Image (cartoon, rainbow, N blue to C red; front, side, top):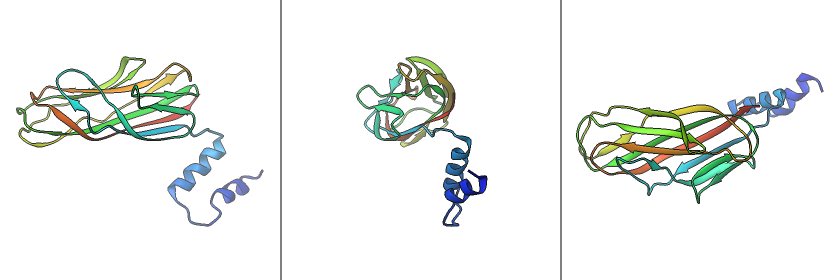
Length: 170
């Protein structure tokens, strides 16, 4: 098939958008778009010990399993995956100069984490550092899970957060 026919089929209505262009380029490259996205459970509380983050709403294609019973994300196609997590909590207090920690685990072992110093106290939204990593997954038993902790002296309630995973290739 001629290149112009492939591009023409992907952009048939002349309304070029980033999504249409990306889908057309992925088709041209022959990549299989494998992804998952999940919002994080807003009932999770985060204290000084490491807390596994729970999933709530999910969106994925059939090649990634988002298991809300054990809060794992398992790609069912082997390859290299980009995985990102973000988190915001509401805080009831705490002292100035506390440290939120956020991380990604593969098969229960930490593979990426970030910590940051926050200089505010009292009631506020607590932004955790954004974390992302690239990892090779076997497509069967390998899984990701996500965790957080903090040392403010207060208990934080997770109020927003999300996880995104995208297969980059073999």
